[in-house]
Amino acid sequence: MTDLIPAWVNGRLTPVEKLEVHRRGLRHKAVSVFVMAGGKVLIQKRAATKYHTPGLWANTCCTHPLWDETPVDCAVRRLREELGITGLFPSHRDRVEYRADVGAGLIEHELVDIFLAEATLDLKVAPNPEEVAEVRWIDIYDLAAEIGRWPERFTPWLQIYMEQHKARIFGSLVRA
Image (cartoon, rainbow, N blue to C red; front, side, top):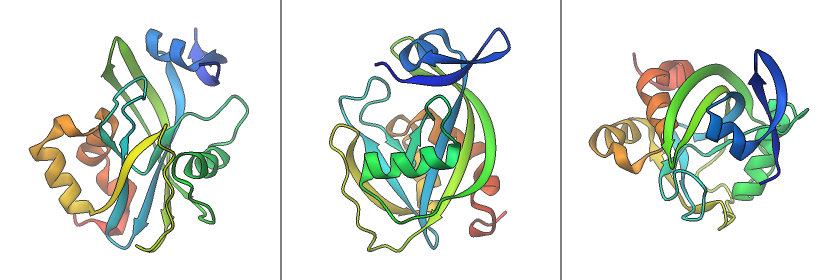
């Protein structure tokens, strides 16, 4: 991997190679997108070839902005690259921070800009097989229930989002 992403090194935002960021557990910028159709969210199962958390279910799109890339530009780029989704306009919803072990000696310590994008259930999706094994629409409450029942099937960050930040992310779409 040669992607340089924004990470804090000795308190200073610095471009650092993506895999090195995760090996060292450096705090870094990230982007997560939730594509919604009413109360349903489009989730993806990560490809088996991903360098961490392969085969686990995650939110629609999650990634790292490149050095000097804005979060919204990153969100639009990765929706297109991972899922073939174009024509959506993600809106910034919130910013959260978390730290999680993602296996293989790698740590995600992310400051995440979270975006929501409205779509319809007939949204054209063309997953990139190097990124995504499959996709499905699921009701937000059913997703929370599945994570509670089978947490090992989901990425650590999706578990954290749904357990700790659901109301902040989904707002009026969820009951208190």
